Structure formats: structure tokens, C-alpha cells
Length: 50
Image 1 (cartoon, rainbow, N blue to C red):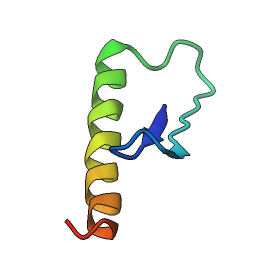
Image 2 (cartoon, helix red, strand yellow):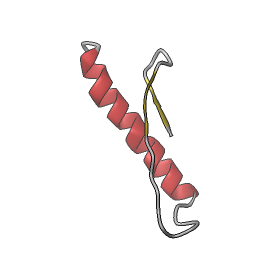
Image 3 (tube, rainbow, N blue to C red):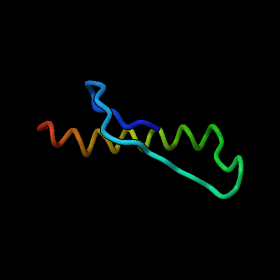
Image 4 (cartoon, rainbow, N blue to C red):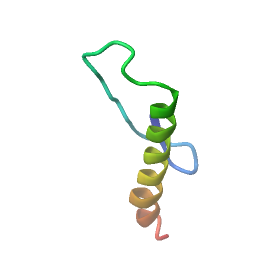
């Protein structure tokens, strides 16, 4: 999952792997997306002076 700043600049990638095929479902994807959104807002928002 790409991690992008508010201006669209790519700042990283969230990569999650599992040894179990099909381990992650749509609910997991939504949770990881929310986690990444919060992480970017907290980590890069502070850098931007927010």
C-alpha cells in the first residue's frame, strides 16, 4: 500500500506478507488503510508544521 503525502508525493510503502495464502481479507485491508492514513497524518503532518 503506497504511503503518500497530502500533495501526492510517495513517501513510502506499507508491505505486509504472510506465509499463509489468502491470510488478509477486505476487512484487514480497510484496517491497514486506516492505519497508514493515521501514520502519514501524524508523522508527516508534524513535519509540515501541523
